[in-house]
Length: 211
Image (tube, rainbow, N blue to C red):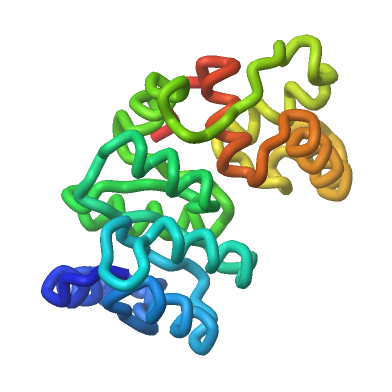
């Protein structure tokens, strides 16, 4: 979603070249975006951070709360660490910059749809480096004390973007057990969503960026 119609039309034309992707709607601000999500039920929403009427962070938060099956992927010209942190805290599944190659954007949309977290080159490192100053309110407790070895394994895999199914296959457990571990992690670490878990994993384990 973007308030600049030329950019929106350019994105639509670019994504129309991908046989497995379809643009079902365009919104000029966050309020219109929420209304269109309600009526069109898209799989993935491309969200800008700076828009009139309602900004992207607020729209992302409301979409994630009201339509949890819809994935939000932020696409912005701004790489400010505060925008990145606020977007991920709001529930976004990734943060990318608009100057990225079109084929990489298309692939990122596919991966977000599958449940992966996507970050533009250098953005995860930038976010982790700024965590003390970012409004994430991440817990300060020692992860070695707070978590069981199994929970640490699950958290590490969340940090590299693994889905529940992939975690289950990797650890030889059921998806239901993975969901239980994820809920326990959220409660123990006092975090709100999976995106915050991924950020916390990078901070705690120094996980390198996954391309």
